[in-house]
Length: 450
Image (cartoon, rainbow, N blue to C red):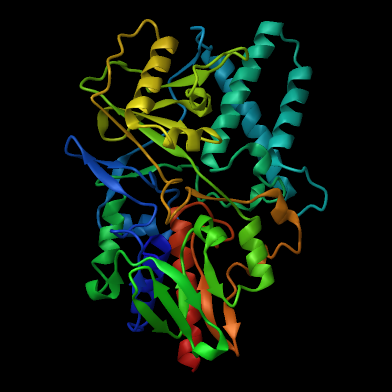
């Protein structure tokens, strides 16, 4: 169920192991799940997943094998750090606060194996940063500027972790995510779809059913297997079902009968799933010169026009790999749903007004096109990717049950896979792919024993 990274990963592993008696049911009109690449000015532009994270994972090796990787890597949060009253922040100050935030987050990684831990990452960050400020002999103006930079980092982390706010992140499990290396942003020359296409080319086309939304899953003893009912009235009967839908979809899935085991359902309920937004401003010319981007600092007494409050949740605008006339803005927290509720013209006009306010010395034209994401509004995704909440700190939350099959009379009828199921690479495409591969291997071991 699902033709995203996890579903394709599972299908490829089953094929590799010699098991070809399967189908993939995908609700959307194309494969890829939360991956979608479009073409702008003859070049790829990723609407979904943006980068490969780290070298030591199968997607990186697959990209290298098929010559899909670009030599150029990307970074975020570069360029001019400027406040909405025109004050540009000194580079030394920017780096000093960045160092302090990094030190705090590194300290937060130590709570994984400790009984005592903070309530949330947000609480810990605020406490430690205020302690740092109190130990400094700063003027009031300098202290305020550091707080404004800290606010930028909080917005950045909200986006990076796809959460509603930093108090929704577990401090205990902050260190459970495993970073594969320090180079986090590998670009794909032809967009993320190029990886999806390579995978699809290795699978029989007739096995993939598009526009096939699953609405009911029945797996009780009376069904002697799993009965899968789709919205187009198709019905599939199978011995085993690997569900790769997002946690956002699973939280609201209408009919699974009988209900999933309590610990598994608790884990699904406790796992966080929220969204981020991307705004692409496409211009006829590169008006920003050699600047790599513009990062927004806000005075605490800033007022906003009605309907434009969401812009406060934007960190700024960055350059885009392989798109010299495009800027990308990142939206997080409460701003995502507000942004998605507007038209693209409304989103673009707000962004341009803000850029002109922040950058009065630049001649900023109207973009010739505005493209924004709407993953929250997508009924088959309902957000971006998962995060671990403070509710997961409870040892009875069932987090360790996410990858365990659901058995009926000793037969593994239902298995979950996806980025939210991977214990250390959650929130990533390679985590989703690895989860699909691993769960398919678990299922195959059972099949060959039978």
